[in-house]
Image: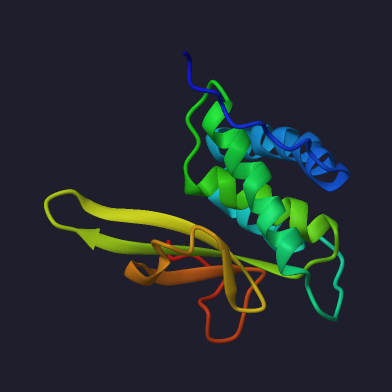
Length: 154
Protein backbone atom coordinates (compact mmCIF):
# COMPACT_ATOMS: atom_id res chain seq x y z
CA UNK A 1 0.00 0.00 0.00
CA UNK A 2 1.48 3.32 -1.07
CA UNK A 3 1.86 6.09 1.47
CA UNK A 4 -0.63 8.89 1.00
CA UNK A 5 0.77 12.32 0.38
CA UNK A 6 -0.71 15.02 2.57
CA UNK A 7 -3.28 17.13 0.79
CA UNK A 8 -2.23 20.66 0.12
CA UNK A 9 -4.52 23.44 1.12
CA UNK A 10 -5.68 25.60 -1.77
CA UNK A 11 -3.81 28.87 -2.10
CA UNK A 12 -5.70 31.92 -0.95
CA UNK A 13 -6.12 35.05 -3.03
CA UNK A 14 -3.25 36.86 -1.31
CA UNK A 15 -0.83 33.98 -1.94
CA UNK A 16 -1.87 33.68 -5.58
CA UNK A 17 -1.48 37.43 -6.11
CA UNK A 18 1.93 37.46 -4.43
CA UNK A 19 3.12 34.49 -6.50
CA UNK A 20 1.97 36.27 -9.66
CA UNK A 21 3.93 39.38 -8.66
CA UNK A 22 7.01 37.64 -7.25
CA UNK A 23 8.05 35.84 -10.44
CA UNK A 24 8.42 38.96 -12.60
CA UNK A 25 9.99 40.82 -9.66
CA UNK A 26 12.56 38.04 -9.25
CA UNK A 27 13.23 37.92 -13.00
CA UNK A 28 13.71 41.70 -13.19
CA UNK A 29 15.92 41.70 -10.09
CA UNK A 30 18.04 38.91 -11.60
CA UNK A 31 18.44 40.81 -14.87
CA UNK A 32 19.26 44.01 -13.01
CA UNK A 33 21.94 42.32 -10.91
CA UNK A 34 23.47 40.82 -14.04
CA UNK A 35 23.30 43.90 -16.29
CA UNK A 36 23.08 47.11 -14.26
CA UNK A 37 25.93 48.85 -12.47
CA UNK A 38 25.69 48.72 -8.67
CA UNK A 39 25.16 52.48 -8.42
CA UNK A 40 22.06 52.23 -10.61
CA UNK A 41 20.71 49.35 -8.48
CA UNK A 42 21.35 51.41 -5.34
CA UNK A 43 19.46 54.40 -6.75
CA UNK A 44 16.61 52.13 -7.86
CA UNK A 45 16.37 50.43 -4.46
CA UNK A 46 16.34 53.81 -2.70
CA UNK A 47 13.60 55.27 -4.90
CA UNK A 48 10.98 52.54 -4.81
CA UNK A 49 7.68 52.94 -3.17
CA UNK A 50 5.51 55.42 -1.45
CA UNK A 51 5.77 55.91 2.26
CA UNK A 52 3.16 54.63 4.66
CA UNK A 53 2.85 54.70 8.38
CA UNK A 54 1.15 52.34 10.74
CA UNK A 55 1.29 48.69 11.66
CA UNK A 56 2.64 46.22 9.12
CA UNK A 57 0.93 42.83 9.01
CA UNK A 58 3.48 40.15 9.98
CA UNK A 59 1.43 37.46 8.21
CA UNK A 60 1.60 39.43 4.96
CA UNK A 61 5.38 39.79 5.31
CA UNK A 62 5.71 36.01 5.77
CA UNK A 63 3.58 35.40 2.68
CA UNK A 64 5.59 37.90 0.63
CA UNK A 65 8.85 36.22 1.67
CA UNK A 66 7.36 32.80 0.93
CA UNK A 67 6.37 33.88 -2.59
CA UNK A 68 9.88 35.08 -3.43
CA UNK A 69 11.54 32.03 -1.86
CA UNK A 70 9.12 29.65 -3.62
CA UNK A 71 10.02 31.05 -7.05
CA UNK A 72 13.73 31.30 -6.22
CA UNK A 73 13.79 27.52 -5.73
CA UNK A 74 12.01 26.85 -9.02
CA UNK A 75 13.37 29.28 -11.61
CA UNK A 76 15.90 27.90 -14.09
CA UNK A 77 18.56 30.46 -13.16
CA UNK A 78 20.61 30.87 -9.99
CA UNK A 79 19.17 33.22 -7.41
CA UNK A 80 20.98 34.31 -4.28
CA UNK A 81 20.30 36.82 -1.54
CA UNK A 82 20.81 39.84 -3.79
CA UNK A 83 18.12 38.88 -6.30
CA UNK A 84 15.71 37.69 -3.61
CA UNK A 85 16.27 40.84 -1.54
CA UNK A 86 15.71 43.17 -4.48
CA UNK A 87 12.56 41.31 -5.52
CA UNK A 88 11.04 41.35 -2.04
CA UNK A 89 12.06 44.98 -1.49
CA UNK A 90 10.26 45.91 -4.72
CA UNK A 91 7.11 43.98 -3.75
CA UNK A 92 6.94 45.59 -0.32
CA UNK A 93 7.75 49.15 -1.33
CA UNK A 94 5.24 49.00 -4.19
CA UNK A 95 2.61 48.49 -1.47
CA UNK A 96 3.92 51.37 0.58
CA UNK A 97 5.58 49.11 3.15
CA UNK A 98 8.76 50.92 4.20
CA UNK A 99 11.31 48.16 3.75
CA UNK A 100 15.06 48.67 3.87
CA UNK A 101 17.55 46.75 1.74
CA UNK A 102 20.83 46.15 3.60
CA UNK A 103 24.14 45.42 1.88
CA UNK A 104 26.88 43.91 4.02
CA UNK A 105 30.23 42.15 3.77
CA UNK A 106 32.46 39.91 5.86
CA UNK A 107 35.97 38.59 5.50
CA UNK A 108 36.11 34.90 4.62
CA UNK A 109 39.37 33.15 5.50
CA UNK A 110 41.14 32.09 2.33
CA UNK A 111 38.49 33.42 -0.08
CA UNK A 112 38.33 37.15 0.64
CA UNK A 113 35.19 39.22 1.00
CA UNK A 114 31.72 37.74 0.89
CA UNK A 115 28.67 39.96 0.38
CA UNK A 116 25.13 39.50 1.68
CA UNK A 117 21.83 41.31 1.17
CA UNK A 118 18.88 41.27 3.55
CA UNK A 119 15.62 43.17 3.90
CA UNK A 120 14.08 44.58 7.06
CA UNK A 121 10.77 46.21 7.92
CA UNK A 122 10.63 48.29 11.10
CA UNK A 123 14.07 46.94 12.00
CA UNK A 124 12.97 43.28 11.83
CA UNK A 125 14.47 40.99 9.16
CA UNK A 126 12.07 39.71 6.51
CA UNK A 127 14.47 37.87 4.20
CA UNK A 128 18.18 37.09 4.54
CA UNK A 129 18.16 37.85 8.24
CA UNK A 130 19.49 34.48 9.34
CA UNK A 131 22.97 35.23 7.98
CA UNK A 132 22.91 39.00 8.52
CA UNK A 133 24.51 39.09 12.01
CA UNK A 134 27.79 37.80 10.53
CA UNK A 135 28.03 40.70 8.09
CA UNK A 136 29.04 44.33 8.56
CA UNK A 137 26.38 46.54 6.99
CA UNK A 138 28.03 48.91 4.51
CA UNK A 139 24.93 50.50 3.05
CA UNK A 140 21.16 50.65 3.32
CA UNK A 141 18.68 51.52 0.61
CA UNK A 142 17.05 53.90 1.17
CA UNK A 143 19.75 55.39 3.43
CA UNK A 144 19.07 54.99 7.17
CA UNK A 145 20.71 56.77 10.07
CA UNK A 146 23.13 54.43 11.80
CA UNK A 147 22.55 51.61 9.29
CA UNK A 148 25.21 52.35 6.73
CA UNK A 149 24.89 54.80 3.89
CA UNK A 150 23.84 54.51 0.29
CA UNK A 151 27.28 55.65 -0.83
CA UNK A 152 29.56 52.82 -1.70
CA UNK A 153 33.31 53.23 -1.46
CA UNK A 154 35.17 53.65 -4.73
